[in-house]
Length: 563
Image (cartoon, rainbow, N blue to C red):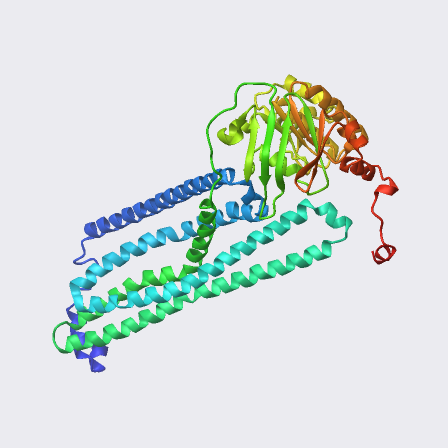
């Protein structure tokens, strides 16, 4: 005390002297203990509440993302084939995985902050209003300006984030293409070109990502700048109110502190704008997919219970774009008969099968099954009558038994083995270490192209369809496998209406009728012998296939030397 008085600080020394600083004197330790226990209890409850809040939030977001993925998958099943054929697999997968994961990340990192910010703003505004409605009004003036600046920047950054995720989808598609065509890329020594393309697309993703982060990062400093201007205005007006006696200095100081608490949540949200804008861009891409026009569900009728089926094409025309692919086509395939469709590439063979299965609807005319227009029948009911063996063999990830039974999920192992025996599959399946339990997929190197095709044929056969479509099913098999396929086909087409699309004319010699397509029109129709004798388009195609020099187009020597 004496030191304070010696230094001339008598007032401060008097204050200290009047304080009761005797250790333990005047202190209610029981009350202090109560406060400490209360604080510990509140902090514990706060921790438990925070844990519960985080767990509930994560669970809710996981359920939302599960539902969203389910909605996207269901949407893909309802989209027309035209849309799926016009979109890359990598882009669709990117929307279903990357974009949905990005939405989940944005929600998990911003949802709680948004709710807390709203509660803090409401509470602080109430305290500010209790001190000075005028100053509160001045503080609120910054909101429209902040909103206008944030909206302008956000619109720009959302577009850039959308470009980023679009480019990411294209990059994924390129990677998928490189992987699926790895052998071809290696054989033609195009790995360098693929790497160069990858590097260019990767650089585009990096550039767009950096620009998107830069644009969204502008929001935080702009909001901070506007907030600082608001503080200056509040201090100036508050000072005049103190001078005029309308407010005390303490009230102004308290109001400025409240205004900082009011603007702090806005600044926090601004700092998370990159996550918010990225999530919004991903959500826009996902919902754009969900908003795509769906395939017309059509009628819910069913076909009459008749086997075998008669198929009739009446004056059918169709075009993918403006140019017609099928033109005024008339064809009747009698019940239990085999009709082979041949023609040069692009003649319309596969298109005809797509129309029959209603992957596309005819532009004009009618397709009838047993006299019933297929547009009056539900797609599921129609396709349940059809067994398809596509040109490119597709195997699902699973066992050989699963793949064969895919067309008939309740098939027993004995039925699977019987179908495999009839289709010539059993001879190579039995040689595998795990037999029918061997796990395979479309990229499995243990199975040849022909063996995978035979598995697809067995899958179609076990479904016991009334109509069987073989879309160039023998184009990728060797002579021995072709003989196995012909033997299986001759056994199983009995009692079924069969349509065969083939380039290898040797596989369709015993077809009941061969239809020759040229530029979407039927130019010839008859048996193998009849068409050869006619000397028309079918005769010319057969000469091409057996490499008769007189039938092959002449090659200009100059063109040959330039190759």
